[in-house]
Length: 242
Image 1: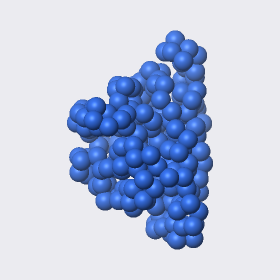
Image 2: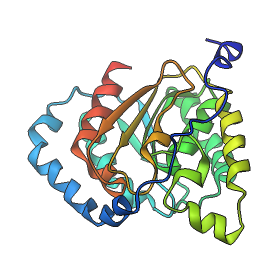
Image 3: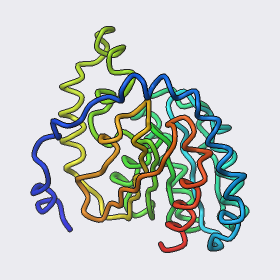
Image 4: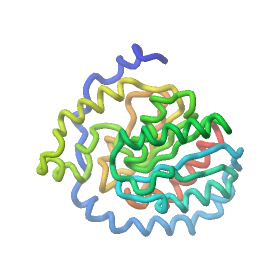
């Protein structure tokens, strides 16, 4: 499906979009409990389809280092994928810089091995989506969890901080993100979200722009999505089918 057809998608962001409820944000402390799901569902996780050795790059969320993706990386390696860190250290929120730096890494992997699957947590997913948009020949597929597809920071728990600090015009940022989203891409995309997300408003994590996008709900805190058994199994099954 080409760009003109995508313009038939929503012309404006939905008015239902809003930041997460403050109670959900306060309850983010339960995130470590998501690790318990790994132990409880380990037999199901290890029985997931085996990988084919393709390269997979893992992109952490805002303020997080590659260590936050380490458990998922080890799981994917166990399945047989060549899961790798993004090699940029801690995510400092500089999206354009990160996209520019990662472009070389993605291109190098694609030339030597195969097109790359990108898996991004929160803001890491924003970077992954932009890489797929700009380098379609190098990016095979994108999987995100807890990623603000719409609105930038406007529908996150940090919206008030951005607005009060005057560092961003949130409405202008939202319009810019919307216009960027209208330039869709053709690779498979899976967006995993939780209605209990206390950092990113869950409606903002749903991709309404790309007709091939799969939006899948799980139960869990935003800060625990990287160690959530449901997220891991969705990722494993998605990779196996692509």
